[in-house]
Image 1 (cartoon, helix red, strand yellow):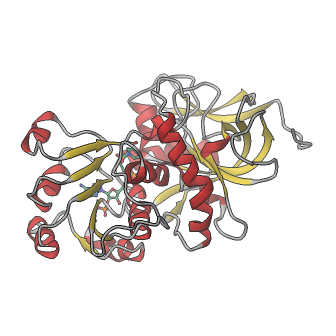
Image 2: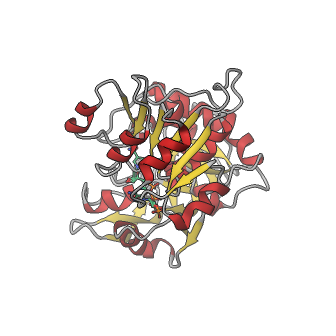
Image 3: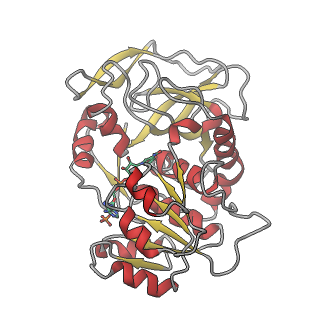
Length: 352
Ligand SMILES: NC(=O)c1ccc[n+]([C@@H]2O[C@H](COP(=O)([O-])OP(=O)(O)OC[C@H]3O[C@@H](n4cnc5c(N)ncnc54)[C@H](OP(=O)(O)O)[C@@H]3O)[C@@H](O)[C@H]2O)c1
């Protein structure tokens, strides 16, 4: 326990019945087994936040997944060596629980799903961007229900010149996916709007194509000799699958990691393909309304504690940040911005 003076109440962003959000006063959450309490310094906004407020509306819950700050209290039986005073970032499923949510002055989270920010590397704002986008990419690329690729630094890297197609490289998820794929030893081909090609190349993409170009499928196939067998679709909408299916190998060996399973008609077209679906919250430990997958959680936690600090020290780049003003009281502005599809190659963050 800490000597730090923890107040009895704090402010948190609460989902309202009319699907808006409002900052309200709440009791400070009580930490249990393997939990830590973090005094939050910065939060980052994801599309899932507006979807939880507007579509899966659960009134009275605390919204928000991704945050960074300082540990002020630790519970018993921690799975990892985290201490009061450590600077950490973490992610959880927001918008489902009245006590646990990321857009708040104080957040409780499972210790093994936080990570310690190495001194002299990321700011709190940069560290907050790691949450959903990087965690999802870890599970989609390396998890037991994902592509199960070699991880950065593994003894058995892929054969030289193996392509990995990251669909949607300029998205927050895509920016980390490109970097992890390169660190794992793949050649990366990606799609993004033309204006973001320089950006995706700065993250390491070898080739970038504009998904709005009518010749995109032909161009990708030519550039790769129709040899793509591994795909990670970071957008995963009905309109993304035809482009992917047209661009990849015709042999029966392709694996596509998706964030939403395509409709049965799409799956029917190529029954030989292995569609591997990631729903990141299943890796987040016991959570309201969410199936818990301890195997995925173990893969994620091991990555956060054994690989991520080294990668951050070694130059892993955070998402490109766009900072909005107004802290917790103004989160609704970012939710609108994302819901209207305005985010392009950028991550909205708030400093508290
Ligand atoms: N299942 C899960 O566990 C899970 C986890 C994380 C995220 N997701 C979902 O994955 C999606 C991406 O999340 P995010 O945080 O990365 O979003 P984001 O950063 O807000 O995405 C914005 C980006 O999407 C790109 N984009 C939009 N339409 C596109 C298209 N048709 N083809 C290619 N790129 C397109 C834009 O690229 P340009 O500006 O270059 O055009 C833009 O840079 C969201 O729908 C999110 O809810 C699901």
